[in-house]
Image 1 (cartoon, rainbow, N blue to C red):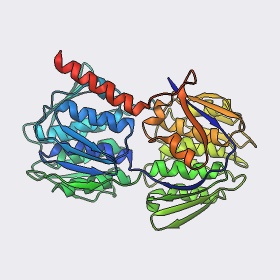
Image 2 (cartoon, one colour; image 1 turned 30 degrees about the horizontal axis):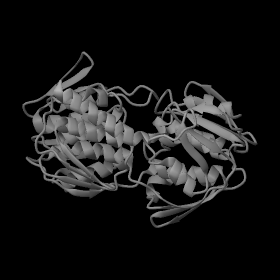
Image 3 (cartoon, rainbow, N blue to C red; image 1 turned 135 degrees about the vertical axis):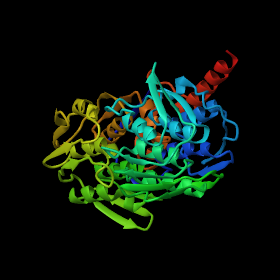
Length: 443
């Protein structure tokens, strides 16, 4: 087991470049199996989730090569029935291969995916959408099995704008016969990025970024060279790190339009946010004002920033009301923040945060990815030493967090639970999973 040891009280300052978006890379990697030609994907962060998705593609038979921040994927020869179950169960986004496999091979069989336990994320919308395109879908023995001699265009309506379901139906529809319309589609920037990638391959996708997406099926897709958008959640975490430490951070390669909901809340809290092209400067103040937060689908306030915002509000002047509308179990970090002296009351989907003058270091646990990020921010602002356990969750979405924040002045160390140095989880994960694949192939 590994942990972060953070000595708080240092103002963060400096320049930082925002990495590629995890939530854009994962569906784009899944979409790469739609073509037998090589896809070259730039600005790819080497995160645990990305490593796992690469292993999913390898288990199908794809050839994948890393070169720094670039991935080259060749899916010329694939077996849609051959997926490593151990990998699928570790990551929610692994379900994104269903749509492209069904689209290209007319068959997909995958185990139910895993991921952070932040709330109910059923596959109902995915399955309903695939059936609307003419697929037969069965759920049994822990697997989802889909088949279709021919996928046909159709009308797909979501009761809720699910990001994953929108992406899966987009990828399933691009090689269908006829036209597909997705209504009440998710509007996130990652949806637009996937549509741009698919269109670069020769697909005909229109309307991404709005609540209605139109897809005209084509017979074949080619390879493409593509650069992934910057990660708005990583960028938002840096911005909140500047705010909570009364720091001064300049973010390079950040897309301002993707961060407008957070920018508005930070300014309302008294934090200075200056926009300059693809850069953002954030200057904190000794103690910000409280603001209320209500998470909503994009372009509303993102649920993936809510835990980090709660850390900031724990030290604000006044009382904040945080309403979580996306995931019902996304307040687990509140208990950990209370260990550090925060005053937070949770009732269902509502959290009441009464700002305190200081947080103090404590032993806390990262229960999921964004909860872990929230605890890192709290530890940076707290008096004394904070120890964060289970940081493998943080590795899923932040590449070498301790190194990048140390460059901004943070006193943060990564170590084993006994205090000795450790090998990074992303490197261990790739080695272990590759060994599992070889073992399964020989058995």
